[in-house]
Amino acid sequence: MQNADFLTSLLPLVVLFAIFYFLVIRPQQKQQKAHAAMLAALDKGDKIITNGGLICEVIKAENDFIKVKLNDDVIVRIAREFVAKKIEDK
Image (cartoon, rainbow, N blue to C red; front, side):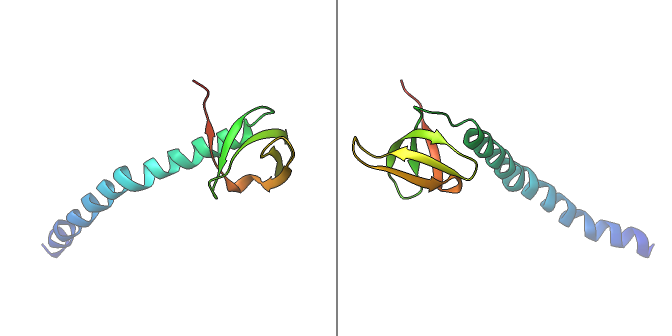
């Protein structure tokens, strides 16, 4: 009898965790995988936005860093983890 009461009281917590998993954790994991794939696929000529809001063009993708061109005169290296997103040409 006590075992059934324990399972009955535990059921709402299990349901709450399942809802939390499917609404928060799983979409966040998918987004992280998509961002990692985007970082791995960066190539010369891609336009990106950094976490600081700079819009620049990729010159050379290296292992940990990316050489980017801010304008015609300024070329800098940024760490891969500071790339927020890739701008798709339309």
